[in-house]
Length: 474
Image 1 (cartoon, one colour):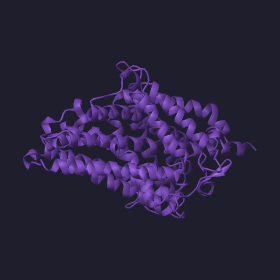
Image 2: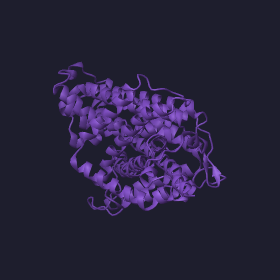
Image 3: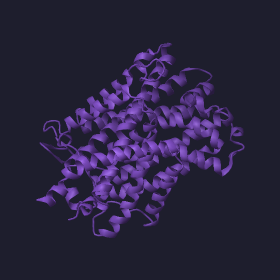
Image 4: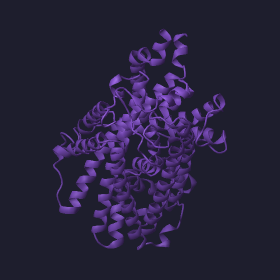
């Protein structure tokens, strides 16, 4: 086979599935139920977005921001349906990386896996940094005290030396992950139930001050405003794919993974829309300001109740929300590296499984150290913003993968089938490209730099060490 042919050689689907759960020295344990998988996906999706993004989106759409959340949910649903089909067909830990390997070849799979590293490892570091900010806001509201800037901000920020809270939340998540997937899933379930309860509490408080008059004019900035806000709030839906990374630890992956992905998106959409309605009904849309967006929900709760304690509870919910995101996204990153290591594209250490704990211990520790350094010491800047474009690129590849696999392997057993094929996956890919096109030029530049580094890593290491390619040489 020519070198170019090797770049686009696909890995047989049956082989990908057969290798599921197997690592060096042990196997992953199938313990996660449909309930846990759904909450894992909700935990990765329902994070800081709703606590921050609403204050930034309302000035663009007015009360019609409710429609923006619905439109963004529809855009996310198109890709979620494609994820559901491939997760039910190829239920393994690699998520869209493995789907691309089975449909479009090794080079595309590597690019997809590299994008997932941007989505997971870099984004979880950025989220951990945000946890420190919310922790300070909570402490300030609770006791009028906050951590010194030197130990609560990254270098480059005002007075920052090292972001200790960001490192601590990564350490806590790592400790939970090392105890096993089922233990992590139970902890995440508690986190998710708390943050959903806090958001429902916010809605209950906000609805006590609901004023129908605040909803008129409903769309003061027209359709353009609704679509502009939809592009912004779309990123609040990123994370539903986390369930697909648990494919090798789910009890019944072919049935449960598709259901978990769709159910989690339904839960998140319902919560987002309810919070949006409560918010714009409790406060005139002209009083929402992007510069104060981080405390928008807390401010609304305090205003509606005429007291400060509701805002304190909402701030606590934000702290819990971020902890849940760090846990689930860190888990997803380790499982994707596990699958890539099994294929020889990254070092073997990432596929070693502790026979007693049945988790990839070394993998988890390496990722935790990397993320901790990023979160504690590196100003992420535009690289963190580029996580959105990396995620959208992976989503687009998944939509294309559904079409390719249906054409090439119509005989494969599928736990779920995308409705209205091929319209749904094609439309899903187009919508991802359209959202990507609307991102800033500097974000594209950061993404281009990240991809250049990734391709260099592949040709210097992955291409020569790939199991498929070494087997050809033999």
